[in-house]
Length: 246
Image 1 (cartoon, rainbow, N blue to C red):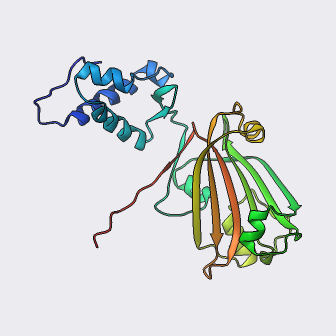
Image 2 (image 1 turned 45 degrees about the horizontal axis):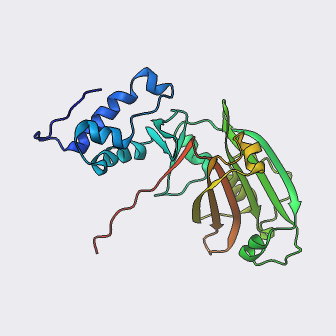
Image 3 (image 1 turned 180 degrees about the horizontal axis):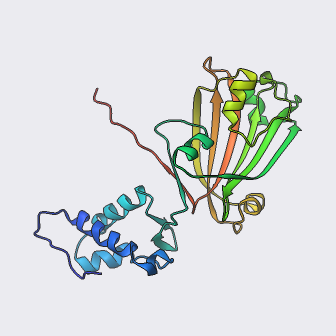
């Protein structure tokens, strides 16, 4: 790694640090899991502020090239990690297909259940009404990445014997004339409990992403209440927002 950067050059300092990091993460030892130098060490070595270093690191994190974990450090992100964007909405299967990522269903489970209170409230149905619960554990060849739990409004008419290995929203539209048009999202960080750790094959207490998706038809009638638990080391949400000119 170069021991200095050009403080008087035309290239911004953060861009020079970014280039240094790009050269580092291309080296075999960093691809194999070696931690990158910390913000403090880089700032001292180059004689610049931590904010400048952080700006460079954030750029590479945003691109999905590296990941940071509090208390552990910064390392090269596994190229098998998955990134998804929130500037448009597709089904999970559609989005992964567009990226050329072939996810597989590791396990699919269908049951009829009395829904949790939040689902009863969302669907505005009697609390003792049985509804279909779909659980899907999905991942890549080297293991699970996401565990989905979906509840469906009884209005749709699902029977439970559908082929849920196929794209879900295509099935709803083609077989039940239910078009999904609107999705409201809630995303938060949490740690894996015993259930999620067993599903995603993670240690209890490891960080995960939890995303709740509230799905509506064009008339804003609720269709699906979905919860997704993602392996935070292998999945990244990227949000791109265009500033209003008004």
